[in-house]
Image (cartoon, rainbow, N blue to C red; front, side):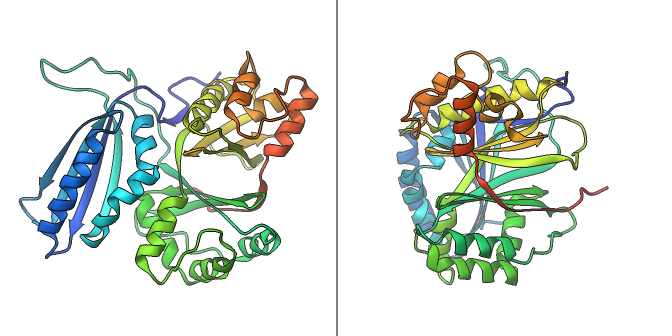
Length: 366
């Protein structure tokens, strides 16, 4: 059995409070306008469920650098807000004030002071130095073959970003007209994404895909491009893996789970709980799982030894107890009832599996 100290794990579902740190670099003439926008944004955020407090600071060394910290009851509460259309609209006025931003998110582990509450998380999780993120968008129905060919044939960008950051792996999947691009980065995710977006081969691919997109974008317009990629972001809310080195004989798969309205976070949590237990089981073929979720779109990325359907209930995320019934209640696509037999679960699994378009990886650094 994999011990907790060996397991690689990150999660938005550990129950701890969340501290969000937003670093901002403002344009020199935008200070007063920024303060007006911030006051309006602060009023909006104060009424969001789960928000506890926020604080605005200005650097004493470089007045163009600002810091916003906020505290939330839990990561799911924050993610529900930051991934919402209301948040996208509320931060738009900031774009004309801010030259650069960086967002950091931390679970609160310990506090000092006589009034501090006891820690919610008793033990730190072990990471592997890799940040996981995904983008998702839809293309016009009927254009799927052309889009798949473009995605499969583009030239890979240079993996090395700088001394501390490199692109480690990119996996592209399609399910119907939905595209999901999952990336793994060693180092700074934002630096890697910016590096990739500037590469000629990637820019050419994005321009070639433009005519097929359901959501219009103009990559020559920074505001249009920013809005597209903000809405396309599909954050990783849970990752768990064996602590051993990555094995070349593992197959990579992705499953698409369209949740009912408002049920995306609950569905992601259900899948995360099963995968925590599965990775700890030495007989399980599941060696790594990443759950991505935004609103009612949930994607589960799996690294599995052997055929995906060897244990279909485990692969689908419903092994044990009454999880199939719970999954059916949360899924928008489960109109044909609850899968109960192995045959029904296998059919459900086949419908959920995404088509792998390309999976490109670089060897880990020594």
